[in-house]
Figure 1 (cartoon, helix red, strand yellow):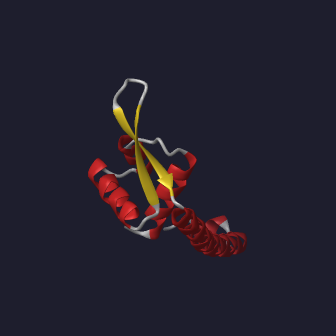
Figure 2: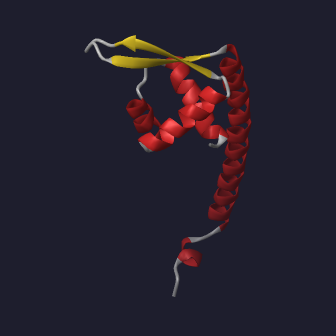
Length: 114
């Protein structure tokens, strides 16, 4: 499981600990099996604690609570994710500037292919 998926899982569960695996699957764009695998991995790392409770339909449900080490990992991943996205933003910004210069230096006639 890559750090982006770990970050998203921890962020989603931090904001809504009672999300179901199906809801996580939809939010993440992953299969239920993949979500189950990822949840098991973060539980094994000690980042999430699972609690059972009865939901409104009187069915057994789970609440996924971030542990203190899970909150630390979420913060660490947030900084890592921020650095990656900032770098991507700067690269795209540079590409856009280059394209603007190319467009300004081009005439319509030079764009038409014979």
